[in-house]
Length: 293
Image (tube, rainbow, N blue to C red; front, side):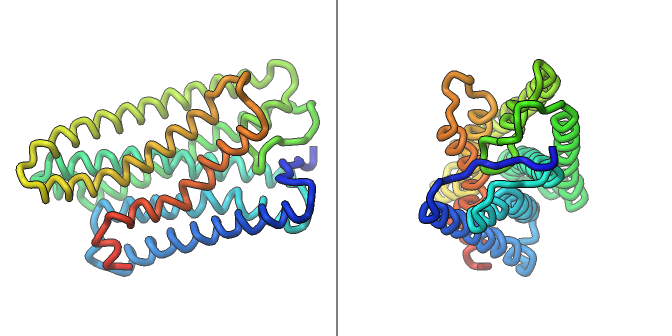
């Protein structure tokens, strides 16, 4: 194989132009939103705190995630082509898994940051020092890198003999595995199960953190204090929920309910929508960030 053929959104030029315009609009909105958050946090010294340091990293990962998949799809629609080179596909799989894995690890770290801020406020400065924050962020990026290395190496070492048509708008591992010969894809399935167990472990950690957080918040006597605590936590919880539900549905849904249209909608929900809406979710209820912007 020298190239793969990605999913065509439409047969007619008019519908391809509509797809081009829609995806370009979403991509530019994601660039603008995440770019503004990165600039605001970097330039405003009031935002040089652990929470905003992790948010800056999240925006960088979001920018990378959407830039890995959408520009190629937009370019293909504009030039009326479906092709992506073999190396380009491998690079897309690696970068997508690297950034997506890093983002999930970072969301887990952010839940711990919120837990320490609300449940152990007197120790917050000691536990979440600048060195500790850098180490946590580095660990999130490194875990994404390792995850991507394992999955990409394993997927592209599998012999493919079912053609070169990938039924997705980017190179997605479940779609590439459909092109594999006989049972050689089972190694990657085993690796995916291990990864999903780790994802579930992180999810349990996030849920336990939030149970502790909400228990502590409900004990706060003043209504203003409760409101401030909820405004710090609810955006993060919304982002985590959107991310986990769509990713787990994409990779765990039974084949019986799988269809090209459903696969496409789910892929857009977990790869395109979160990077575009995350800046909106985080800035909507955040006065400090609004003032900085």
